Amino acid sequence: MSYRIHSFEEYQSVYKNSVENPEQFWADIAKQFHWYKPWESVLEWEFKTPSVAWFKGGKTNITYNCLDRHLKTRGDEVAILWEPNNPENDAIRLTYQQLYEEVCRTANALKSLGIGKGDRVCFYMPMVPELAIAVLACARIGAIHSIVFAGFSAQSLADRINDSACKAVICSDFNARGNKNIPVKKVVDEAIAIGCPSIEKVLVLQHTGDPVTWNAETDIWWHDIVPNQPATCEPTEMDAEDMLFILYTSGSTGKPKGVVHTVGGYMVYAGYTFENVFQYNEGDIYWCTADVGWITGHSYIIYGPLLNGATSLMFEGVPTFPDAGRFWEICEKHKVNIFYTAPTAIRALMAAGDQWTENHDLSSLRVLGSVGEPINAEAWHWYDEKIGKCRCPIVDTWWQTETGGILISPLAGLTPLKPTFATLPLPGVQPCLVDASGNEIEGNDVEGMLCMKFPWPGIIRTTYDDHQRCKQTYFATFENKYFTGDGARRDSDGYYRIIGRVDDVINVSGHRIGTAEVENAINEHPLVVESAVVGFPHEIKGQGIYAYVILDGMVPDEPTFKKELLATVTRIIGPIAKPDEIQIVSGLPKTRSGKIMRRILRKIAEGDTSSLGDTSTLLNPEVVVEIKDGAKR
Ligand code: WTA
Picture 1: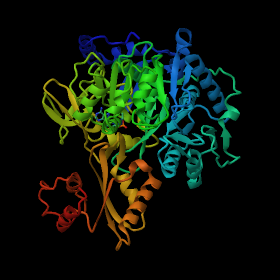
Picture 2 (picture 1 turned 120 degrees about the horizontal axis):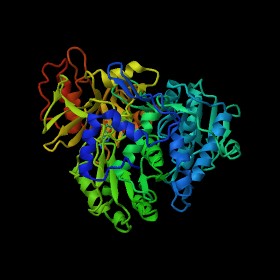
Picture 3 (picture 1 turned 180 degrees about the vertical axis):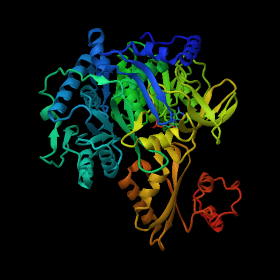
Picture 4 (picture 1 turned 135 degrees about the horizontal axis):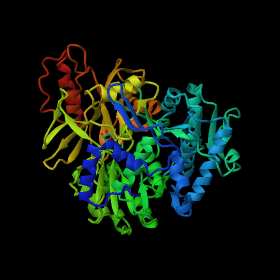
């Protein structure tokens, strides 16, 4: 694409131009995509309401840009390269032509189920080609996809379905992960039994073939309605600001919120950032190990790569099956050139031992990426030495569900690197650091809360059905700024290093979990009176979950109680929210106004009890001593 940046000097001048003439800058990029009708204005925005519109009046369809546009030039090249969970089964290669046809068939099937523009469709699926196909099928007909990571519980799934009143769910019979088959359809049945009145249809992909219970009124097999559809389907012309998808994510308060992205801006941003950050070259095999249930999978497994005509490898399984060499075996087998993963995976594989990396030929690798949480120096160097053999740039990409695409990152091979630094903002991105009173901190060698001063095309537009919450969460903390919830440092070269969340969000293995959500789940256990949850540094997961719980009376058997508590959290949220440590306490440190002093609980969970500060003003200073003595670390 001609939006490709080729050198660090070019980046610097492009960046300068993007800040001085943002509208011209983004218009020149957007022109390189296909539009049925050009936009009337490039950007209209204010961060108060907030109200942001990119390419207003323009009409496009993201799947035309991902598929149709490539058919003449690279119809026979591989779009999706699928590696199954079981390495003994064959990989599947879908060319752009084949993917186009599958997407059209599925789009026609969805239409036949009565799904159309503006309808919400929930996904609860394994990492199989049909997931990408059905996501694109929704986008083709203007239906809004809401993908739920298939590790969430039936309750979480039901909450998400109901929040956006989804008309259909697409799932599989079972998911294959490692040596386990996970009953996905059963979870969907349970969600519907909890109560999902908006659901009219459940489209079920037969994947493992294990038996499922069937509800003839709602359930339809994929193989009964997709394969016999016509292989063409006119894309629905979408307004640039029509909704493309909803993706639920955790914040500091309440239930997860539905982050909304719209067609035009998201498309331009995902496409632009994919090519430039990874310096993707035609013919490269690109592999992002994320799950499509998270934003990384949306933007950098499906949309970003396909917008650029790339080959995107999609892996069904887990990094440790059949052994801890699986990632490297796949890199060797498919001659992967660009590899993008999370620090938690790097740390887990590092802990498994270097021998797993040594018997695989990793010479095809050219670029490595990291995403989802701060990467510690040890993991960075191991990744660089053992995987990249000290010849592959590592792009530490900082971004969020709400940002749609990468905001701060090196451009692979162009930006001079510093281990553990996300380095510099991408063109069009205007970060700043702010102090607690909302003043911008100028200059270098400073630390503060990370905000954005100006919109980029991929910015969140709203939280589904609750615009007030969007305003409150992101735009009300600091006037005229988007607040990320992260703290960051800017060093003497102006490079950014992300420190981590400054709110009540815990980043567990790169997954965002709200402490309030976990507390609410714990409180559902009949013996629990009150609880407080904080994060603590965890060697593999980055952060672990530490729960302090007050019980109603004596516990008959502590191990049994703890097992039950973990089961409760798994039932309400999912296994990813299970506390790593549970401490039973008789009280929680509170201020005189009744607020839990999380700072103290965090310190104790971190094992740092030397600097608890003044606790004498607490309502109940004596519990601090008790908690300290009973602490798990
Ligand atoms: C964290 C994932 C440090 C950060 C794309 C952010 C990171 C949250 C990095 C968003 C990084 C993401 N370095 N921290 N390179 N990337 N984070 O919405 O705290 O799942 O706010 O999006 O992950 O998580 P989310």
